[in-house]
Length: 511
Image (cartoon, rainbow, N blue to C red; front, side, top):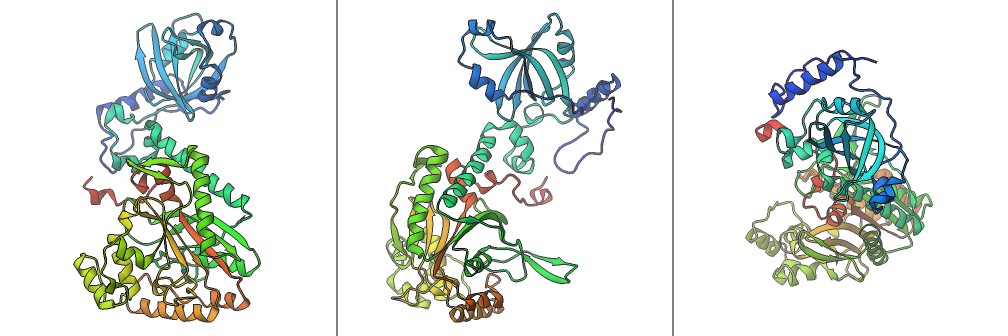
């Protein structure tokens, strides 16, 4: 089938000039090929192999072995580099599995393939069919008798037009994945990590479930939600900030072990550690407490590291990390004094805590409870120093509205957070299953919210009603999947592990 010559579109918004000579030449070449009757976007070529398979099967063969190899291989991929010698051409072909060298020369039956290739550009997708051999330097190479254009690339790759900046890597992830084997490795690793988490929990008897993404009442975490409008119902809905309250409703319903790996949304800032849309693993287990989940978390992280890295020890941004069990456990107040250097008065005196936070330059609010002030001090003075995997336990009840109170000290909760390389990876606690206590804590959160705290929780009476039916004693945990991938992939920014991260408008960046 022939195609009409493509029209030159208007310049796009952004920092690229589609009227540049390089891009105009691409469009002109596409017009010429179409005028010759060549389809620019056919869908007829079918590869029979992928490059990694050929490297695995034939990469170690000697030169003489290829003389006996008569099999013809069909490969499809992108032209990534070319070395033109007039009567012959070497080029690199890349598919999803790897790269291979292709050699075209004027030989009986291959003249058309060479002539066509000379009209093509780096970035074009082609299909080739031929036999394998090894060059004198030992490079596995395909010698095709047939080549055809699969997709014409109208836009040059960065090496031929401009370097791909970090900003454009995130905005044009598709180009980043074309150019960077490292980026492709990260996202392959991400898939393996999620798969390893799922396999571990399934082997522990957990049932994977799906709960709503749009909530009538946002809950499960202290965060500002995204709000939307459902026109058919004529009511406001919220993108979920956490699946927690729905998963615990399932415990009420008799599912004793459940988990979900899915998206959460929080209407907050963007940084190297935060994206407003992120992936979380949450799991809940009946007849367990936070001590049980610490032990399970150690085993889970250790199993994931062994599955995807083959070892528990690795390096993150130059720092050695080891997931080998057991991990240290330190109480929240103990950490404030011993690691954060806070004066002991900060543990019981709100004014002393507020004065100390002011000295540290932290943000303060008249509505902040003692526990919230302590948490802000913790973020500044303690969290950056928790490099090795460390459980911080027994958080104040006033910042843990869904956690079970500690039996010995009701001002504290049976809760832990896991910190690695100075950032939080997981949050867990023994669940509050007393409906009257839960209602009172919701009421207090509603007062905090009414006083101006946008992260205060809403009153969820249906959840309280569910607890009235009786939820078994349980423990639950949330794990930041994106941060876990950052750690195991050794990348510094959450944008490096999310395929299409949210970004500020280009206009705001001066483009």
